[in-house]
Image 1 (tube, rainbow, N blue to C red):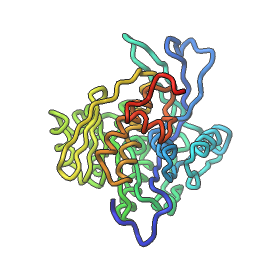
Image 2: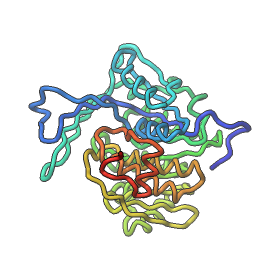
Image 3: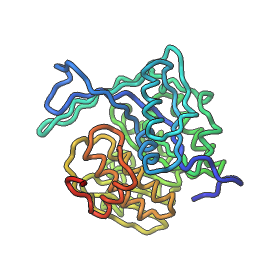
Image 4: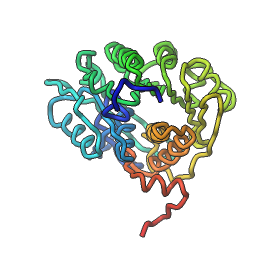
Length: 326
């Protein structure tokens, strides 16, 4: 970890982004025929923050939300899960970002519909950021979703990372490419500078190949990403094949933990949370194992948030969890 000023920072991890309301129908039902919707919250940076807070870490999430009941729904959920919200800004006459999910079983695929244009988060300006909160941290975690939302969010991402580096805060960056938000060539061009400034980098194998032409085995992809980036630690996720980490030139891989998949959305954020948890303990390999276990837990439950505990994580990692805990 990098040194941070002369005192211990208030938070172990801070993050900034958009949390949306997630409206879904159960597997087998169609959005076009829906008579009711299940309401959850979801957003990559918020998902990571919540998972870490539930593991007992001190975490703050920053963002811009509407100053009405939908914004309050998000704030209450964050508070309930132990996330600091002192850096959240509330905006009058603004809208909450929404997204809709139609779950499906093979041969159909899950369908996601975004309704987040011109949301409170997309219209966030650098003046909305509580910089004193954001930088009072050991790690700043950002993703490639936020800069896709608007030019001002791209500017905020850039300024957040630059300020963090200047303050000696460790920068964690998850590529998190979203094809429904921007085209891959535009994403690659915009995200390259953030890769170069990251201390810790997360990327899916498919994104590494599509955006940055990093192909080959997981170790080859890791080394190619490391060559593009200034990151000391690079994590690569390969879906059902597991995940890998490259730290100080040494590559390690672990298989995925088998799980009955209830909901795929949010598993990548769960992995990032586990990895950061390990890095906070100074152990990238432990982070890889915790990330894989948290991703498996996330896959086994509905919702973007991984609602777990340190005890459950430890049990899954020991392979001691059973169908029924008595």
